[in-house]
Length: 316
Image (cartoon, rainbow, N blue to C red):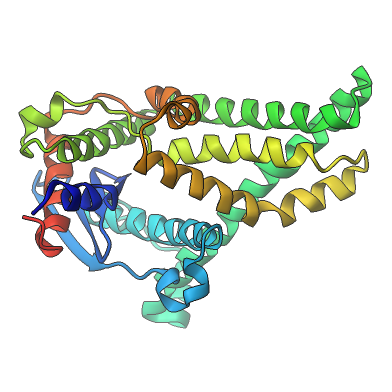
């Protein structure tokens, strides 16, 4: 295989930390490796990637594909988190607790489809909460700040953007103090180090992976930071002191901002020039919080997950 083809394959690999494991995603399949907390054995599962973009050519167009990818990531992310809880053995502890009448009624009513309904409902609630916290709340906070300091219409967008970034950073720092989240961040570090090892051309061993950085330009953390920056720039051009109109415009423009941010993160993954380094810098800095140095057993799950993808896609 040529170096160019290897580079293209590497750019198509993405991943996500899950409960006691790592998921790696290629073009056609994703593979999840999870260690059971009771038996210490690693379960490896492979499934085909079901992308919205494959259902219509329109969803493959620039900017629009970013919206489809964002929805795909939310649905898949929720699905694999729930599945990893089962594989890790955490679900067994939960199931030992007595089921409520509501749990029994839901299982009888929806049967095997209950899990799918829970996933879609969770994604819907996540989107609503994210818009409320990171789009609507900054508008209200910034409206009080700008009135108090008599800020111009042009400056409203800047103040709002800074408030949004501060809320996001406060949220990240707050959850990073939780013990379970810190462990998840270690698996996040294992995911990045393993992908970086593969992209460098090194053999996938625990020793080789450990030598690589836990930071990566295509990380979802970088994507979220870019979303914050893009939203600040876009909203600077929507100059109105009407709070209701500002809230509505922020909600309506969420898909556009997601689409623009997706194209920027794709550019960062393909290129390595000064412009890309500048736009990637904030996200890379934040990854020092959202990733931690992993233990060897965590790296092992990440390697097995990545190898599962590579074996299926004919790259080994």
